[in-house]
Image (cartoon, rainbow, N blue to C red):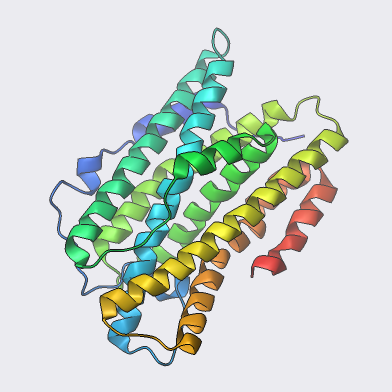
Length: 304
């Protein structure tokens, strides 16, 4: 059973205090500085790609950073729908929960708008078409078809990794583009509150649920991770096509395979492994079912 020291009312108060607008972060018409790295190298390692020059490594960083933001915009499509479903379930009930969940949906919609504005600026300034995943509504339908507990576990997983990436690698990092860092900071500020709502909702969803039901939900969570891994592999392959187009350099089959492998491994580490080893995620799962925690922790090596 979850033992939380916060409630919906305190989450709303914090959310109101840290609120920001799109124009605070990325005013319309902002130009991007491609002379700087966007994501820190620790999040997009690739020293083994010795056939790439320093300029080409920076290009790879830009391509990865654009895909990184698009991936968050991609998954937040289902999160908006999920938050509204949970708010509707509270109708005529807990007004603090309704306020928190409606703010949750509104903030996720704002995040999508921010990422889309940034990706549009990237497309405008990068100078070459950049291939990214599409059809988020179709993927959202698949996710929302799973057990509600599984959907909330995936959501908590994703929101915790956004915080981890910012606090461990982006915060106070003077080597990267300050605009990109500011964008990730603002995302982190609000996702910190969303992770709390996820835990509050998990507390409700698991009340009275037996162990067999919880295990089925964990099965769904694991299945969704596998499906997401397939999307990450597709994005890695798209990155290769974008790189060749932007660098105006044809890669050999061996080089293309190496680049796709590095990109896929990095996306796995960023989006899957980081959540599977996250202390708060494992503690949350362990409070529901110690066996489920052990099972999920054991998956981490698969996506390392």
